[in-house]
Length: 214
Image 1 (cartoon, one colour):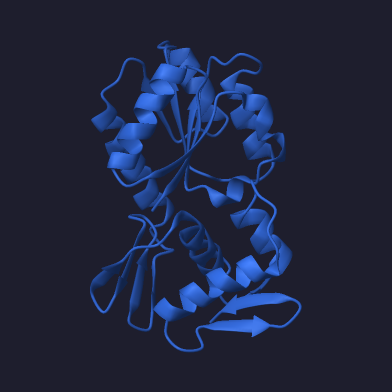
Image 2 (spheres, helix red, strand yellow; image 1 turned 90 degrees about the vertical axis):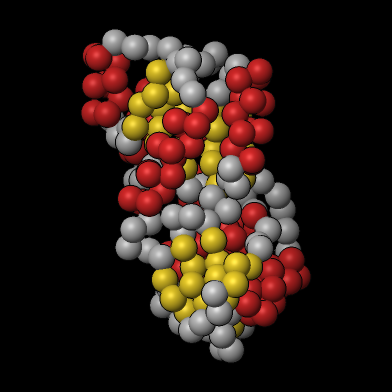
């Protein structure tokens, strides 16, 4: 399922959004303190939902920092700021959409799905009899939907993004398990789970180095 990074310091709103996201088949990582983003690998996320008025750093600066690092994660701003100048400034530094508070959660979901569709328009792929729809966060095998855990999805998405390339083990662990320390055994377990789904020999093992999706 698509993975959202939510940066919002209003706990009541954040908890309400998380519940609504999960009901609509999104997984969510929530940060109320934007300072904790410094060591976070943003490449594991499909979408960014960002408030502008935060405790320690303006949302505009956070977005600008993200874009300056070359990270093109689709970003939707949610803010009480309603002036056209505020919106224009956000789009200028790399926002993809802007929704003013208060808003209907259903509209937020509609906008997020549209961003996903545009973002992954050319990245959905067919691997043998397995269809991976990145915009919808779905995997179909012979037409039947396969349920994946968040980590398995993040791993598959990374391999698809780097398809044809050797992806180093450390890069995989830093991306998929950015919030935890894991060893080779854990990675091998998840690779094994993907191999049960994908056609035979779709994933090449380069011993001691990493994996390649053919």
